[in-house]
Amino acid sequence: MRDGLNERVRALRYAVNRVSPAPLLVRAGIFLTVLIGFLVAYPVEALVPRSLLALTVVAVLPAVGPRRVWPTFAALVTVGGWLLATVGYDRPPALWRLVATASLLYLAHTLCALAALLPYDAVVDPDLLLRWLGRAGGVVLASAVLGIVLAWLGGVGGDHGFQAVTVAGLLVAVALSALLGWLLRRR
Image (cartoon, rainbow, N blue to C red):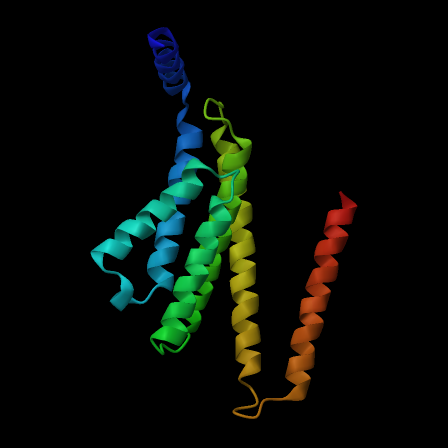
């Protein structure tokens, strides 16, 4: 029994000594992105010490297990915070909070995808991380600009809105879906 425990301790020590900084940096990025997403999504009134501790634990989970269900769980907790702020506390949905929450959700998702591919002892070229984050930043920027433009177009008709703007928004969504499908088939 003791020999088995000693062997596990030696194996754990060996694994810890082999950890490289790049995968740890990606996992730290996951933790920070998820935690900031919680702070943006949740109302200030709900951020008491107990809930902050619980949210911190939930933010650690996808960083530790990006291949498991934890990234999805953290995203659902973020969306729950957004719903709590808008429905539970009657806070009007501000565009900047919506864009920031969506951007942080996407960044956490893409960082979890990267961390799921990197073993703890991987030697990673820093250019790979910069290119990955550059692509993610491009997607976030394009989505934010498109979302803001569509939100502005949605308010063009005042209280009644225009049916043409609604149809145009649906056409843009269909066109983007077709473009994404074409890009996936092209590979």
